[in-house]
Length: 335
Image 1: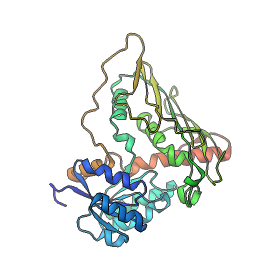
Image 2 (image 1 turned 30 degrees about the vertical axis):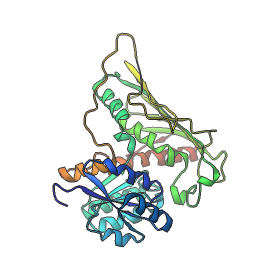
Image 3 (image 1 turned 90 degrees about the vertical axis):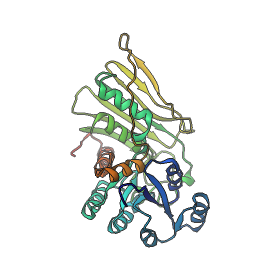
Image 4 (image 1 turned 180 degrees about the vertical axis):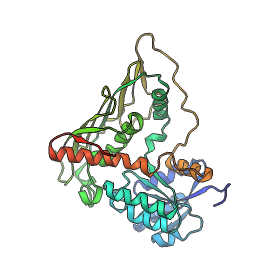
């Protein structure tokens, strides 16, 4: 790949991977080079829809000279296996959330890419969303004052059929509502407030025949003793009702909670204490996806903004959440 060439992306796994393929249509600096999936029906459908190279065999896909980066969209427990092959082939790697099913395998994934000399990006799409970029800018600029609290909520419904094997198992996904659905919100908490120092959590399986939790709650403390964060994540609600954060500081607040299928509001709902009203900061030009983030990093010779180490943080917090729930007490988070 030369300095002026668009980054060719290979999508591996055409479940949610099909959405990522569609998102590459207007990506800056990156394009869809190929797709790969063992399911013949999904592969044929993708070939027809995207008009790109389509492979049932990963080794053949990695041998395609038009592929510069592999976007891993397989079930969680296979991320490391695919990344090993991609890194060995000299391809940069993007991994959908979570990086892997536990922090130990996530660290191995990071090390694998580092030893191969390829870049690793974590696909946390909300970090590239203009609304949340504005929230981040408002915090960093002091527009909202000193951060006091974040309440993150995911209240969705998933049928029993959603949990096809290995989904719904510790070996396959490494967790349930906290890991699969709530991880986006947990990553937002870390990105906006920093890494918590302590967590108390409770999780349980309420209404599905699965190994992992379908309801979870966590209360987080930070180095700043005045800051708290909470999250509630469930797939037992009657509908996909809420997803987002309610955040406030000493000057103002912002609420981004919405229905899952509702359009993402461009500005959110902002509130300010009397006398604190200001113009909201401009988040500026920024990557709009993990693929654009990776393309920028490759072209500039830097690392992705949301790299493997950033992706690991949510896994460390989630591991602490599950430990707290199992042991029945708060857990210190050692990063």
